[in-house]
Structures are given as structure tokens and as C-alpha cells.
Image (cartoon, rainbow, N blue to C red):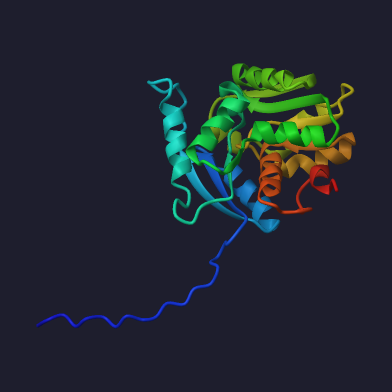
Length: 251
């Protein structure tokens, strides 16, 4: 029996679910925390977030540029037809180890014409916006990675008054680290004449610790996911967004 030709129905279009303020987010394959934290802040402020993942390895890739190739490919897969207004890469330590500008160059080459940000860049801008140069820095990383982040912050002109790390290596342990433990470490590190606290790593529940640390220390707190969302929102034109911490209270 011959197949009956379908009836062609006239289409009606609107602007779509996200005609503007589209943020492309690249997270590591091991991430359990950063994606949700970023979505909660950015979408709560009126942006729309589209996420993809890139492989995370616990040992270096066989080829030096393999991770960069994979990251560029992942970024290129984000809404290739509709487009995005901003590209955010959710990994502080890799940005520190590669270099802030080199990471931005890689992201912008993967999506020409699209503004890009990383937690390291965003944290630097956030701390500068808060008027803080003397920083207490806390991370979950193993010591060598922690020291790379400290060096990156010092290279950006910050004075690291105190730093501490949990010396962890696995993303699963990052996700299991309690907000209370993060807050306690940040409060202890802040007792050195610091002007702000920076809690590095998108893979830990640091956003949940912001209010406690700010209340106890009296200092503004910047975390990787919070700063990344804050900067991405600025890049897509969201004015005066609501969000956690004193950073979002700035006019």
C-alpha cells in the first residue's frame, strides 16, 4: 500500500526559550557540585544556562594538547546553531595551571566572537571589585595544585595573607567535603589581616558556606562558582543580579 503523504502544517515561531542571555557552561566530567551551583545563581538572576562536559583525568593526558583539543570541542558543541552569549569554563585549578590568559584565548578561539570567563578570571575581577588585595585563600586541592592557584593569584597582584588546603585529590572527595568544614577552614584562614576570603574550586559546596564565613569574619567571601556566575551574568548584560554574598550586593 502506498504511503500517504503527510500534511504540511504551517509553523508559527516565537523568540524561543532563551532569545538572549544564553550562557554556555563547560564543566568537568567528574563534577557533582559546580554545575548546580552555577545554574542556581545564573538562572535565578534571569539567564539561561546550557551545559556540556569535558573529560577529567586524574593523570595527565598522553598528548600535552589533548585536553585543550577536547575542551575546544566541548565548547563548540554548545548550541552551535542558536549560539551563546557567553562561555564559562568551570575549573579553577586547570585555569591556574594553564594560565589565565592562555585559557581565555583557548575558549575564545573555540567560540569566536563570544566572551569567555573562568573562575580564576572571575575571582580576580570580583576581588578587585570588592577592593580587596590582601586575600586569605582556601582550597580542597592537593598541595601542588593549591600552590599553583596561590601562585596565579600572586601573579595577578594579590597578597596571599594566609592559605590552607584539605590536600584532597579525588572529585568524589571534593563533593563530600561538608560546607561546615569549608566554613571553618575559611574562618581560620581569615584571621590574618585579610581583606577578603577566596575559596577556590567549583567542585566543593563553598557557596553554601558564604553566609556563615561573612557573618563570622566580617569579610567578603568570593568562591569559584559564585564569581564565575557573577562575571558571566555581567557579560550577558544582566544588571544588578541577585546572588549569594556581598559580591552580589555591590551596586
